[in-house]
Structures are given as C-alpha cells and as structure tokens.
Length: 130
Length: 102
Image (cartoon, rainbow over all chains, first blue to last red; front, side, top):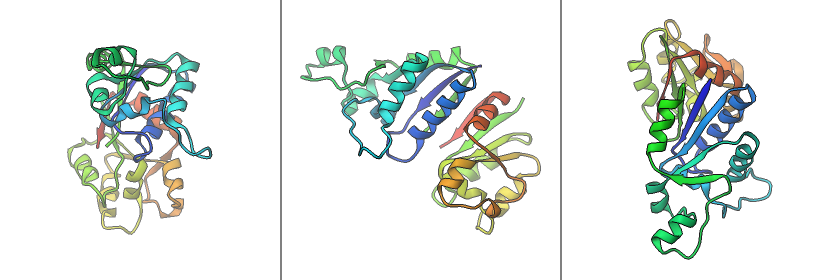
C-alpha cells in the first residue's frame, strides 16, 4: 500500500517527529511504499543539518536522512513554513539573499502542492503533530 | 467502511479524546499513542469514556508509548488492545482513512 506522512511538529518538542519516523520505518519494513513525507509548520525544523543533539541522544534529522537513503524517500519541506523558520537551501539562499544554507541531505524545499499531490496519489495520509 | 482515529494528547491536557469519541462512528478504530495512552488507564476521571466506547468501537494503545511512561499492562482498561508500530501500520492499512485528533 502507498502511504504519505505529514509531520507538523518540530523534533525534540513532544514526540510527533519520533512517532512519524517510527511509523514510516515500520511501514517500509513491512514492504509498504512511502510516496512522500511532508514537513509542515514547525515540522520543517526536522530538515536542518545544523542540529547537534548530545551524543547519547537520538539524532532525528540524521535518522530521516538515513531512512531516505535506504528507501529513496522524498522528504519535502514546506517553503513558506521554511522561510519563516530559517530553513534554507541553495535556491532559497539565492532568492532571499541569505549567506548560508542549512537544509539536511535528502530533504528538499517545495510547496504545499506537494502535500495535495501526496494526498491524491497515496492510499493513506497519516498526520503526526500537535 | 471504517475509519482509524488517532489521539496523541493526554485527556488531562486537551479534549481531543473527548471530541474523537463524540464524533467517531460505531465500528471505528481508535488508537491512543504518545501522551494519549493516559486515556487508557483504569481509575481516572475519564475511565468511563473509554470503557463505554469499547463496546461499539475498537480501542487500541501503542504499547511502546504505554511502556515508555512506566505504565504496567494491568493498569489498562479491559477490552483495550495493545499494538506495536507494525500493528499501527496494519490499522492504517485496514481502515479506509485516518483522522488525527490533534
């Protein structure tokens, strides 16, 4: 079955990013397909590679990147939410005159249309967050 | 035609469990996870809410989240079923759509 996941909450806030990650991993391990993971609102903070949690804590950002590498996931960060919260890739840095980027590997910045498409193309959309 | 409803907040923090139980139809599945697992405890002010729903709705608790909060299985309301993440995936697959009560 084809799933898409929406994450509305930042990492290390409550538990939504962890739940979304564990759910996605479990679905992929069962042989399901993940069409897209869409990060919205504070969820876009899952996509900064500057995150540095203590060494004995889980690294949620790296977990996503590693899962994406293993299963070729499409990790999409909402552009409007990203601009507000300072999540920047090359294109956004150029467009908005920023001197740096911080997008994590395997993440990309795109629009809300990607969420709508995910909802249409997938059998199920599962939402995590506050 | 059945839906899966998910509740991730404690009933002592938000009224999402109450909303979920009021709006969900008979035959629905309800999954309590994250702080939502507190709703499945015996002996609380909301015990009757869940206990009376167990008849015509299926209520599930995400086991890892229940355990992570130091709660023992014998404190869980009778009729509530425990699932793991794989079971969560199965519930999403088995129902037509998923409604998150956030």
